[in-house]
Structure formats: C-alpha cells, structure tokens
Image (cartoon, rainbow, N blue to C red; front, side):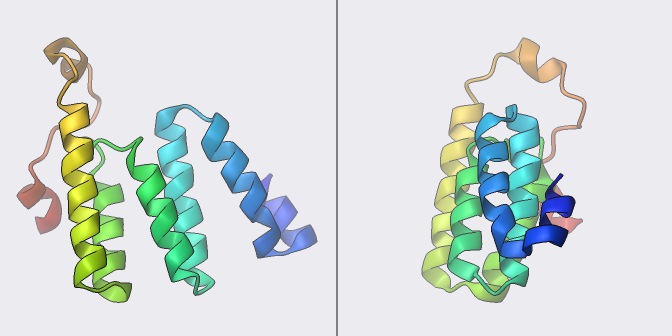
Length: 124
C-alpha cells in the first residue's frame, strides 16, 4: 500500500501512512515499520526526523531480541550524530532494556530469536 501511495503522491506523502501504521500495528510490526520509516527519512536527508522515529520505535524493541534495530540506530548515530545524540541513544537503550527485563522467564522461553548480549550484537 505504501509503495502504491508513493508512486501516486511521492515519498513525502507516505509519512502519514507510516505514522498511522506504527500507531495501529502490534509491537513487532510497529518496530519493523519504524525501522522502514526511519530509513526512508534518512534517505531524504531528514536526520532529526529519522532520529525521532528511531527513538519512538525503540519502545517496541527489546535490545536482546531485536539487535538489528539497535545496530541500525547505532550505525545511524555514528554516521549522522554527535556525542550527545549517541549518549541519548544509549540512555534510551538502557531504559528499554530495563523495561523489557520485567518480562517473566516463561515469556522469554517462548522467544523465537536467541538472546544476545550487546557485545555479540555489535560484533555482527
């Protein structure tokens, strides 16, 4: 649907579609849509907007289960950010990690993806 809207109205007109999708989709899909949306904004040169989208999408994204999202954001900050924005990303990551640490052991056992440490995720 987004590709069709993009072909008819242009890339910038798909922002509203992305935002509605992120708001209404389940967490896993919202996280993936956030990554797609942030990547689109980065390509358009909208660095601040992409950073805000990464920050918003982070609330749906467990760093131990979704290292790809956090690596994308890490790489984005290395390329386009400064020391302050990089620290903000790390602060948000720690905050989200703490929130997801509240999951029960039973929930973690049902994970499809293996749990990785930050060092393992960054090594890839």
